Length: 223
Ligand code: SAH
Ligand code: DHB
Ligand code: MG
Image (cartoon, rainbow, N blue to C red; front, side, top):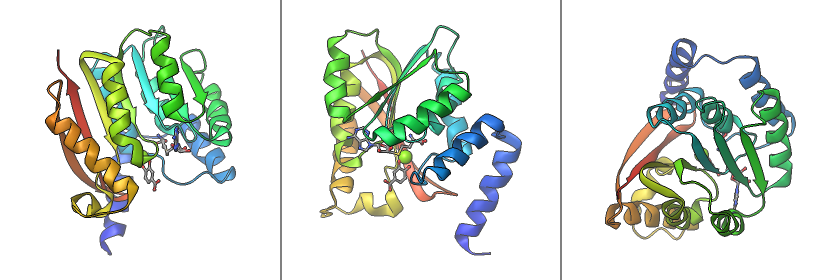
C-alpha cells in the first residue's frame, strides 16, 4: 500500500470507532461537495479532536476563523452547552450560505452565528461589541494572516483560553526559512509569535492522515 493509502486506511479505521459520522455530518459534506466547495474541511478524527478539546476546555464560547461548509463548526458547536455561543467568520458568501444550511440541519442555529466578510474586518467589529472572552479560538482561514489572527485571538480571549491554528506544516514547507509563499510566511510568523509572546505558551504537532502531511499549533493564553 502507498503511504497515503495507508494514512487513509488508518483514518477510516479510527473514524469508524472513535469519530463515527452521522446523517448530519454526512449531509454537511455531501452538500459542500454538491456546491463545489474545496475539500479542505478537517478530517473526522481531527473534528473529534476539536470537539474533545472544546469539552476539556469547558468551552461556552468559541470563535472560528474560516467556516467553509461548517463541518468543523458542527464538531465544535456540539461540544457547547445549550446556552453556549460560537461565532464563525467566513469571507465567501457562497461558503457561508452552505454552512448556514448545514448548521441549521444540525439543529445548531441557535448557538452558531456565521458572519460573512473578510475576518480582518469582522474581528475589530467583534471586539467593538465587547463580547465575553472566547474560551477557544480555531484559526483555519487564509494562512497568510495567521499571525494577525493569533494577535486578534489574544485580544478576544482570557487567561486559560486555547488557541488552535490548523495547517501549520503544509507538507513540511513551514521549515523553509526563505519561503516566499505568503501562506508559509504567515504561518511561520504565527509560530514565532506564539514562541515569543509572553502571554502565550504553545506547541505544534505534525500529523498525517486523509488530508496528507500537515499539522496544527496549540497555544494556551496566560494571565
Ligand atoms: N474550518 C473549515 C475549513 C475552512 S477552509 C473546516 O475544517 O471545515 C478556509 C476557509 O477560510 C474558506 O472557506 C475560505 O473562504 C475562508 N477564508 C479565506 N480567507 C478568509 C478571510 N480573509 N476571512 C475569512 N475567511 C476566509
Ligand atoms: C487548505 C486550507 C485548509 O484549511 C486546510 O485544512 C487544508 C488546505 C488550503 O487552502 O489549501
Ligand atoms: Mg484547515
